[in-house]
Length: 210
Length: 339
Image (cartoon, rainbow over all chains, first blue to last red; front, side, top):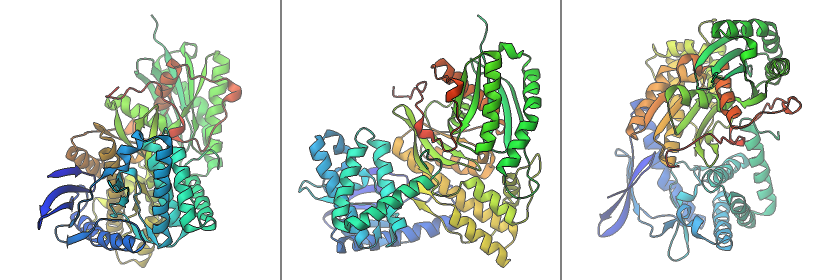
């Protein structure tokens, strides 16, 4: 059953060996040249499970990978029961929202501390389970890096996702994220990343305060 | 009742353009004069000198084409930013002088906003995901709560800049009727081999500087023809743009995609976006060439919209804003489909 047709891949909810699983299949992109498309597909399909595993090693909950098929550009993984953070953020009280974002900040901190850059930090890629865990999904654009630059871009993307979809409380959410992030990665490192993020935002086209 | 007219001045980069547009969106004149550097890219001081020199001529020509007298103008609009400071200041100075001489209100227009609004007007798009690509800008935006929100943009150089600099490094020269982008496009259409180049999409943002450096380095090695390199550069850069636009489209579920800005004239980019839009059941709209590059009509039309919503400004508050972001501007006239 198709549960989400994203820009990058289709996500199906299927039964596989008696388990409820997510079947993720990357779409071939007709607008890209076949050679270029194939290269991007294989690279991303191969890379994603590796990064999902690395995230676990860092203490960040991610889905379990069952199968990978490079030719078909598909991955079979655990179905994570729960709700997208994007969907519940609006229903929370300010206090609950801040606490949730603080937890998200800790998760991002653990990733970065262990050299993982998620590459697509949005509230739709975070699932809150009934047990209160936040499971991070979609590592399709992730990369390994310990550089402040890459970390800064990652946080910038998180901030951008908040301001473009949850603009009413984007600031309080982002501040809570930074608090949790700083506790994991250390205040010095966090400061460096935040400064870098601001620099990146200014480098981005046309910021009035530059 | 007599129809109202707005005169718009565009001077943010190498073009000096004057447009005259009626309040119901009829373009009476759209005159443009482009500065062509002898070598290299746009030198802001030289470009601004060009603008100052030809401003009078372009304005007279616009009035002649429109068939109206200066005193029939109701509002004067100018491109207030973003753009090159010296160039913007020429347009702003001319606009202030006209506004003060004719005793008509003045309105400063965000250049990116103007590209979007003219695109929407001529293509009749209502609520599109916008890809605005030019020599100075690379932005994916869509309307959300009072503003055009930026969903993705370049983290370094604009895609048009990437193509232009590559072309100049390859020794190509622009012609008055053929900008560098068009020359790259022509060469690319004869390319066959896809050369490996870095493909950099970070979430919704893109980076083109690494792509440019890699392409220039490979060119200097001399192993591939210029045709193949132009072809590969376009394929990679445009695939990145289309991918990010697709992400924004999937995220916002808007019914249309609008391609605007100078690079919108590229047929290959149009084709990629058309294929992608159709896959999502969205209507693909592209700005016709005369409104794709910088022009005065887009400033005049956005001036009409601003004027109708009382967004005029006194001269003393009409400073140019070189780094004015699209998402800083509230646009009260926009109605989305679900409103």
